[in-house]
Amino acid sequence: MEKLNQRRSRALNVDLIRTIAIIGVILVHASGRWTVDPQRFTQMTQTETACWGVVCIYQSLATIGVPLFAMLTGALLLQPGKKESIRAFFKKRWLRVGLPFIFWGAIYFIWDFTVIKIPFSVGAIIQGILNGPYTHFWYGYVLVGLYLMTPILRVLLEKADQTIMKYFVAIWFLGVTITPLIGVLTPYTLRASLFTLDLFVGYFFLGTYLLTVQIRRQTTLMLMILGFALTVALTYLLAATVGGSKMYLFQQYFSPTVILASAMVFLLLATIQPPSTGKKPNRSRSNKLLGVISANTLSLYLLHVMILESIQNGYFGFTINRNIISPTISVPIETAITLFISLGIILLLKKVPYLQKLIG
Image 1 (tube, helix red, strand yellow):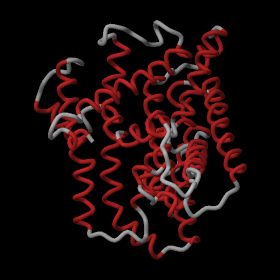
Image 2 (cartoon, helix red, strand yellow):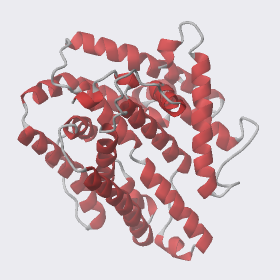
Image 3 (spheres, rainbow, N blue to C red):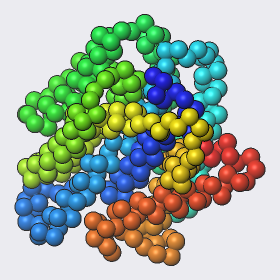
């Protein structure tokens, strides 16, 4: 557990996990879903198929972003030795996460009514508060659920041995993977209530469990590659046979291949340590950039959709999207520009008095 304990905000492995996670989230939104039916899929030109294939790879690599965030949050919060009252815990979460979600939520309500042109109504505001004012705010509601479970899970982990931890992970894995697979791959359905563990609580718990696991680095790397490769191959297979929204079954956060790839990436990054020289480390420019991105991942997550849509719709005076440039090129360009414009705006806003705590 010590691997993620030392000076959290400055630890290289924490910075790497957060940075890769936020890049993954932006990349998922930049690539978007490109659904096709089997008939259309077989009739696509070689160029269209190649573009779809590259975007499929982007999506398969990027889907690990949210699972990485959930696992890192669990690894940092579910430490058995952590002693704090429930009141102190929720006060910290309110200040660090609650206020930024409210601040950016208000910004997105303005965006909804002025830019997206959603008709203004009290009902729209109430519904936005209940479900999130914009599509990516769903993760805030996931966090609330995970925070509510944290005091209970801390007690569980304090008493749990390796057998109980493995059992917890196994029941969660079976529950989130078997039910959707049966529904898509067979004409039958399995009642979802058979497994009652909440979806993201498994990733939350998994982040802590993985820090107790010892796997050879070479094996971890091979399993990670296998997870990514299977995600791409099985998505291609479903596109050619099933099509529609179901073709992305293996790119869902809870597909067995994404769970495998996410867990192995987390394990690889969590074990990275800077070289020990006996002196105070001199952080390189790349490490400093990682630190800046890592320290602002919450605000980057909340702001980036607005910036990405501005780039795709030409609100900045230039337009980049798949209709103008091949998605093979446009998707990584949109991701990079969105990341750095968002980061620049956040750093400027944080210079404004009283805004720093609100921005996140």
